[in-house]
Image (cartoon, rainbow, N blue to C red; front, top):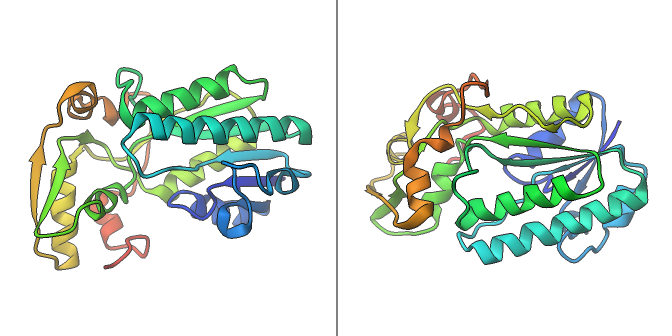
Length: 250
């Protein structure tokens, strides 16, 4: 199978690329590093030539609903249009568990992306995952200094490599619409995993657990992002991940 991976050099994307190649698939990576920009459409048509499936794991680092929605809707339209022209048979998009009641900020943008895929003409699968173990480090990187701010978040973080393996199974199984969610093995809070990562990395920073206002903040603190009882459960805990080669050291 020839699989195109949009965002194939990112947190999940590089695992998807590696896992698919190890399984014997032909993989083409769609990223600016490879001369392909799903936002502008540059190089997309050529990259999708002969592809059987597309996995969209693109992401953007912004909490602005407007900016994130523009990013996801533009990229999704570009991919779906070019997939239809190329005769691609399966569009797989990665989203986030528990966001139905959090139609705000970044999660509102992901819901808009899901709607664009569901309302499009391409056979598709929508895969929702919990926050990745890498999420704690991404949040801490947003602000430097002696303090790190943790939006109060109840989560069940999952290993990006396990999400990638699940995505590949969905690709191989064919379009299903809404696929099974995937979450991590343990309930956690964002502040606690941030503190454990800092300790593991030997970094002295104080983590402030702050409840954000509005619908977005309520959603983070509600526990909805831990997913439901029917979700597939990964086996790699956050502490396992801290000791693994997947954990980027400072």
